[in-house]
Image 1: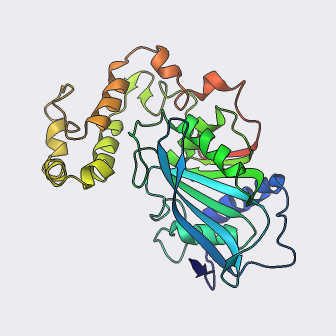
Image 2: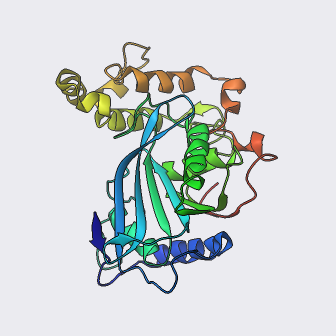
Length: 306
């Protein structure tokens, strides 16, 4: 399918900084090849491509390509990638305008870049929304991101160069990806995420467990594919009074507000039960400090926090 570019684009100062810096970084990705003198006037959109990972699990992926007269332009282009647990086809959490506080749709963000000669790829993280597999927060994103990049550079429409972008968790996916020294990555833009050492900040603070991991698990477990497809489990989740649970701690596995979603309960308790800085905290995705020697040397911006 194709869709027309917006007649006008109003972006905030924050967005201009991000997009401008991102485009400057992506200059390292080289010029688009094969499009000749054709200028894209619309977008060729492929929805829910199921991209296989090394273990056979397939992740839902959307691709936006420059198009002319309703047809994708020939040749190869640099690619911008965002991997997210928040829905590849849901609104973007990061792009707002001064006149319109509503977040931009991912399609609108994609149109901005596609009109400038880039291909945009969004992918649901493992076990989230359209993707297969079991969700384990943070710990699958390094290898899955690497495999996604391998798939991208193998496509005829990619010129071999990838830039990554994203806010919060979508910055964590980039930090995890960077630890694997992925193929093709020429630029990265991490906004407020990417764990240097999650034992010191992000999952724990100097070792003290951050209870926001529980509320994140509950809120996102509620909209997870496994719950949304099971009316009984969905009803159980909606009946939970989360605030009341916090008033009657301690909890245990099998008796917590996350019990109806055991995959979410399990990763929270894995984080919670490892009270010492042991091998658990040295895994790809939550401990970039241990992988700095291998970390990609792509051009990058870390915005707001590290």
